Image (cartoon, rainbow, N blue to C red):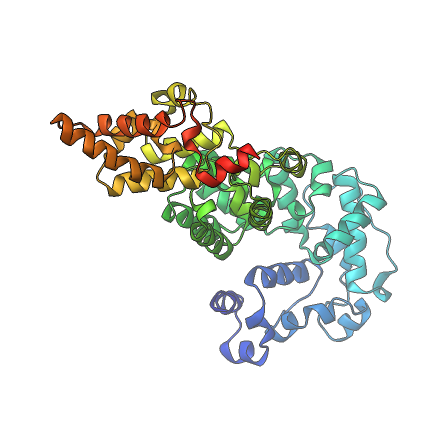
Length: 432
């Protein structure tokens, strides 16, 4: 509302006239700007607060009626007035109309149609389809339309893409120009390239870009993750905040925050939640970003095959995150365990947090990284044997040695096959 009032005052409207036309307070200032500009282009003079507030009604009236009401000068050719604001304008560009007996909006539409046919090599059917999907373009300022086309061309959009993604033409040009000037790069990614990949970004306000980036950094989302999902910026800041908060409340999703593809689960949040719920119904415990964020065909194949395993990329993204170490430090060693992909990330994190709470250093855990594959309860139970061994041998074991000894005692029961990772219930399921 404050921005709308500010805009109205910039047009010279006083407080009294603004308050007499409350629709101006409810309207988006960008919309008011578009309406005011296109009215000027179409011959309206002395646009008062009352006239601007009645834009939707007045634009449907016959031009002769508007002239009689002294809103448009009698000698004004509305079609020519619109055409004078086209840039570039084809030579001898002429639009045949019925003159002042036509409605103002009808003349606008005819000029718009003919111009788009020329500028974008479009057919009548192309323009009709565009208007059906994006009816707001029928009220578009021609100056702003031409600016949008020029910016889109500069970004590398073809006429076909402009027609396909009509919001490129319908957007508020000041936003696009300001974003490109203020944020040529964000999170290390080129905004121009991002706009080409995700055309909806041309519609995003500079303030929303800043708000969303700050929200992402507040939640410790890395620039690498942001670069992979720049379409997160065409969501509302409130939605991004709410979805990140919800991810943190769900154990199976919170554990994925280290993943560079985590924003897949923000952009496709409802789909990810639905898939997670379905996997739980099937009693499949491993649910990484690769599963929750995949396309439907890959997800359906995963379920059909009954795979209860992580992908290498999800597993090592998780480990890289908790240890804050490059995967070269542990990947080869970790892959030697026969079941390194079969343990849920939630279980691994639970074991890691338990060991940290028992004052084991992250470095010691990394030295015995297999330990993360084993259930916390088994580790707790076998620490008793380690304590007994330490007492009997009269030796003080290092943290690394203690963890190695825990693994030894667990796996000894399973003949060192790696089966020690399973809980009792999981072992029964495996054998059934």
